Every structure is written in C-alpha cells, then in structure tokens.
Length: 128
Image 1: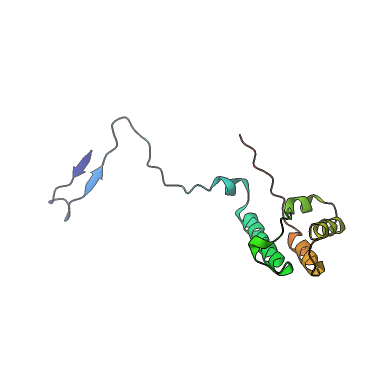
Image 2 (image 1 turned 30 degrees about the vertical axis):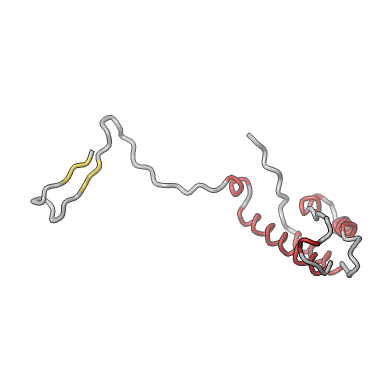
C-alpha cells in the first residue's frame, strides 16, 4: 500500500511503500550469483585453461600448416597429461599424438609442458 505525504510536510510529494501487516522481513539486497561452472571451478583456472586451448589450436594450425577445421582429428587431453607422473611421459604422449605431423614438434611439446606446469586438473562436476 502506498502513502503520499502532504505538501505541507514536504516540499515534494513522496511515495512510501508499506509492507503487508504481519511481515517483518527486511528487503533483500540483490546478490549476484555465480554460474554453476564458476562455483565448481575457479574462474581464473578456467581462463587459464581456455587460453591454453586457444594456444594449442593456434600451434596445431601452424604445425599442420592448415586451417583449424582441417587439423587432423586428435585430442590433447590436458587433464590426462596432468595425471602423468613426469614430463618425460607427458612429452612422449604428446609426440605420439603428433605422429602424423611432418614439421618439428619439439618446441611445441616443450612450450606445452611449460604452460601446463602448475595447472590444476579440472574434474568432471558430479550431479547431486
């Protein structure tokens, strides 16, 4: 219910909204909720992962000397690499994936290992 003050008590009329009788709640301040993905994962870690994925695509485009759509079907699974105990095993896995590439891949492999060092594994979210 709205009540308007009289002009005698205030230079301009004001409208006040009253809460229904029996309600003593304070008005809630709007709270910005994070998306489900950013609640499960750290936003900064997601950004790092996205940047890494984009860098990998750019590098593969250069290595295979073609457009992104024409890159041979291969998947460099960063979580799989992070699960491996040593850089030697990681490097061997990436080189196995790039067996069809005729350009030298050593620089790509070493840069990739440098970039994933210190990253966190992103686990699959569990449904509740």
